[in-house]
Image 1 (cartoon, rainbow, N blue to C red):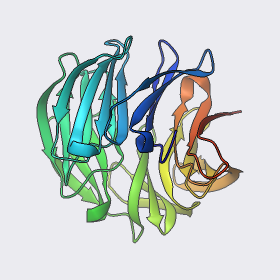
Image 2 (cartoon, rainbow, N blue to C red):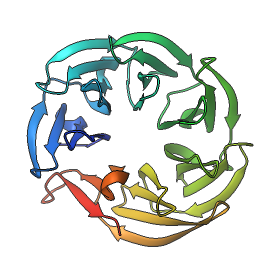
Image 3 (cartoon, rainbow, N blue to C red):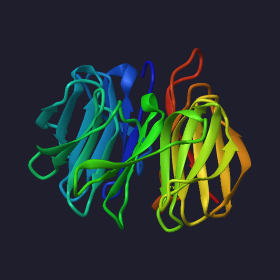
Length: 292
């Protein structure tokens, strides 16, 4: 595998990991039971985001090139549909309750797709390109990082529009995001400077800030252990303890590899997967970190 590796998703039924090998123009399918790659979906255009609907066995792959979102059946990986957004189709999220796929794209939009038939049913307008976003499970909001506009957009998905814009207190380049819905806390990873910013989802107020390693591109909240995992391209995983909903502290920093900035936390396996790109003598791989 060559070049950058972007986002990952998990199939809990067959225990597979889908990895966007952006620089390779492929999605790699890893069988976690066998511990090996079992398939390569080829012919993609810089795949960035991937979403999986387990009950439909459908895979949605968002591509930078041409803004194409391709839909595959999850058994033989035959293409069963495609959607064309203006360009730069990026992060993908799946809402199991409504069976809707959300795809961030272009200079400012999130497309809403009906997963069973693969048809676009709506679009949400934003002021700039969306990076990571999180869907509330117990509410109707979507929280969206819009780094070019230097804010977090709050979308009401029933209304299909932005209802608030939250600032991140002089920390910019807000790319990754995680959500602690129970404690009403939103975690925003910023790169300028390298900082985790914690927002109150009731008010939008900044509750806490803590310095993290450079070039963070994925953030995950571990509700069981009340921790945040920040995967950083500087070659680090930062483990941030939630002392209480208002207090956060980096407790551990684990060395990974240069440029390893994306991954996936799978809570049911207690595993943090980290994608390591090929750099010099370092081969491309997905590392599994068992959480204790």
